[in-house]
Image 1 (cartoon, one colour):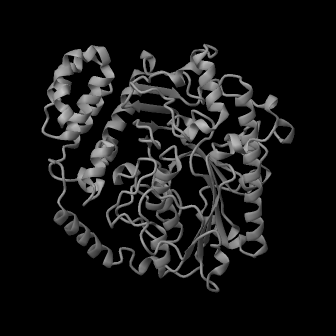
Image 2 (cartoon, helix red, strand yellow):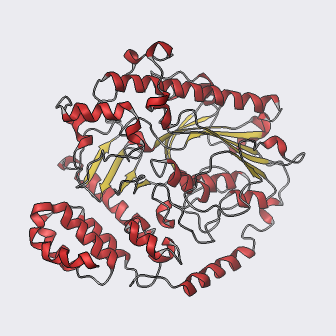
Image 3 (cartoon, helix red, strand yellow):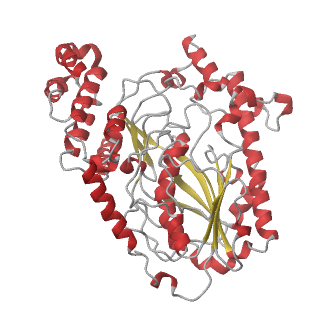
Length: 536
């Protein structure tokens, strides 16, 4: 194939990366300063937006996390780079966008270049005891030497006396499966009652949806109890005054139209960080404060390293938002969505403090494509049935319809993202600015999400997606430019799309074909050219 990277090229680049890593990029200077280093504890829940009392949610019962917020710093604008766990967790553990490495599809095991190290490796080299209890789900093959221990028994108490620790405890009590048929409780067994639930405007008022919402808030309360247990354990061990505590969720969720989608409900997550008195000098503001600065998951790795006195490694794309190596807040953060389990789609988003911009690269596909795991919830099935029976209003119906090429939301005025401003002349300048920000970001990071899944799998047998998009014969401008044209739904672009069906590079030909498919009947004249490509 025109874009293949030879095995020799791959071995050569991997050897060069290994040689670079043989020289410790951190040096000893980062650890020569006297004074204690903080322990760092991560408490990570699954699949929840800020469904918490401290974030103002009237449905929530979360006393332990609310207390943590009073004692710590609450971040209002934190975003999971992907709206689902595995690609999000890759971005966390490496400090690299999954789209750069080619690990953006949900459930994949593509290899990554050696220089994309997992950040606990740097902490271990610096003397930290690193544990993970217990979910990993990094969406790639885990290298050796990441953790001192990663299991359901992993615990900071197993470290050597006086050794600083970085410990992760993952809580699965709020995971999506809690609203599946086999997990649902009857209303009389619930703390939160279905009739009391405040529904978002995109959900129809159906008994199944109310029941799932109530069950989910009970799951969040159970998760909160576990947070309280972990905090109590830390205090009883006499370590609370030596430990910086992070609480956050691994992605948004979990009702239909949240997890897996780039709306606020899929990417906006809670984050609270508590600094003990000993390390208040590392805090950005006093206990009980709230911060609006933009944070994304690729920022977590460089931030933890900074708190430990370690400068950011060159390959990391995030920024440290705390510690001695703190970097300025960006104007935007970026999120992505590609294949989700068995269904292909592709979206990218740009989020500023005020606006959310979404680009749909496959607008001819509906939002609510059937995904087996998502359909295990009665809420999803009831909503689909109500739509087919004509019982949904215009806002509630959109989930079951094709997408516009672009979406723009004022999240301050429209937190549920139901009023698309992309066609409003009053917001034309905002739209243009955010569109350009995405255009630059996809090119600068050589976004591997534009590679067709099957083709990428075939090409990656002896290389990595990263090497493919960085090879000399890969034209990122031709590929992304064609994808942008293909997703714009302009019939006037058809002659150019037909011309690009004959492009030398298969990925450009692929996106030209996608563009013809998106135009549907308007692209009939492209049919002979498309038939020729059936043998491509």
